[in-house]
Length: 195
Length: 82
Image (cartoon, rainbow over all chains, first blue to last red; front, side, top):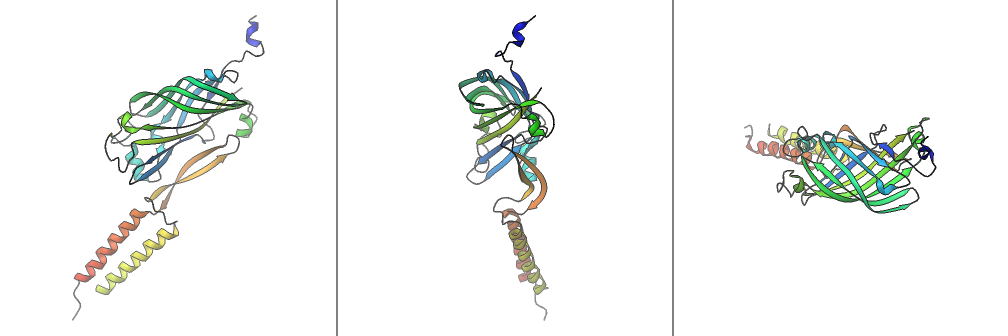
């Protein structure tokens, strides 16, 4: 019955959970304005990605960042960053990226590079973006990473891209000497698929 | 009183600069969240966390310089005892 479900070579996409129990997942941001550079990170990352090692080009998923997890080294600046003048995290608690399609997919071994097209949601504004991404599939590495007997695979997702805060109506046109309009983002996150 | 204010101003200046140098001579803004990076050998990623701390920056030096200026300036307004 249903022999195709067990036929070798017909792999089923795995679902990777990006809520990292080790708390390593982070997205860093850098704003380099003429008078001031601001560096910070966000650690409140969740979401799932569907990835098929036999067909990486079919990858889809959604990554969610808790706005209130954005932190910079100065506590007062962090408060301002999260406040109503800037991110307004009470009204906009999540920053999201929903991947819809991978283009220009190149796979070598367990590493895949591509351009991921999706919708980026920030500060109540959604915008379609296409950004470069690198996916590293690490089969059977879950137990080694967590130091236990868990069976499962890991998917590491790396991505560098830039957005403009004016595109997302974040205090647009204001204080650009101190708070750059361009926000450089570096994503380095891992998801786990337990078996 | 005049001498006391000047000595106090010099002491504040020395203490502020000394603290700033001792905590790494940070030329950015004062940091109250200290960033720590933890490598994850399996994935090659680097975890980032913050803990409470204090690394004085140029705004701290500026505040100290202002206080020193007020004290030193105030000392000029104090009349000498005759």
